[in-house]
Image 1 (cartoon, rainbow, N blue to C red):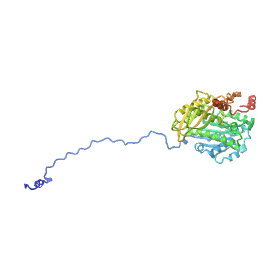
Image 2 (cartoon, rainbow, N blue to C red):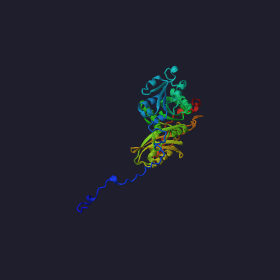
Image 3 (cartoon, rainbow, N blue to C red):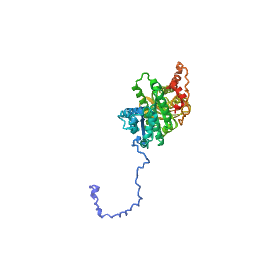
Image 4 (cartoon, rainbow, N blue to C red):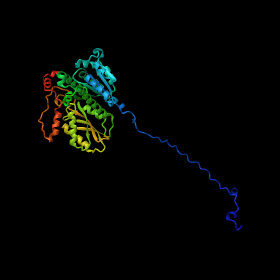
Length: 434
């Protein structure tokens, strides 16, 4: 080796082809693996969340007679939520009335062949026979309906005579049937109209599951010097609000939900009910404020259903997210105090709003149609054997501020009683009632 050369230059290069070959190991075949199942995203569900909730229920609203058609026309023009959730109809014996229904698609002239659209002449029997004449067509249209609202003004012909027959058809079909009717003001409309209305109401409650009455007497007494137009508007709006509140319970899901079965149970158990809505500012809430707000709404509503000692209430509440849980106890206690029944059963629904207020809508059962007639109707069947004596006891009003609530409740209990002459007449002339 040459000492001066780098070590790598002194080594003789090796030809790789002259190196001994190391045998390669035999290639081992992988063991046969069982086929792997294909992964799937399994879902256990039998509902379509994108399906319109309103398609799950078949709900109809029928206005019958002049007043009932007026309500339907009002709903069609001003309450799109009802129109979207239910199918609306106007039935009458009067063709001129039906021609005013510009926005109502379903119009039906009762007993067209015989009455020729001239009306029923304020005769309930003609109204009754008109519905019987067209019973087959009405039954075919109602088949498959889950819930029916019957809207009528009682006292004349088509409403007083036809509404009970309509309810009977619905009962035969097994439809949950709720009637909301106007009762006449005796002073304005007279004793004959009132008797027709009372007789029609007796027939109606025999077939409808539950009835709510709106008193024209209260509309007038609560709004002195009101015009006819405004009085009709208030009555129409009150009825529309009742329907809308019930539909909201059915169709609007809540974090604490009231379902259709709850409603059905309520209406099946109570022949009479009243419904109202109110709003309370959520600042400085306390039980006294809540109680007085509910009592004031009852006093100023147009329903004359007697709720003393009633058994059941459904209360739907929309509140802000910072509302304390004590609100439920306060509302429950308020209804207990107002109805004077410590055993009141209250079903509650809760949802949230983004405003600093509490909206309350409620259905509350009633023993009968008026504070004056505590014994006139049997609570479950609606049967009546005799005219009841007035039961209101008028007590002196105390001016003390501490008794403000008691005075308010006296006003609630005394509201909308018929005049003494009609009470006396109906008591003496029993054959005229029912």
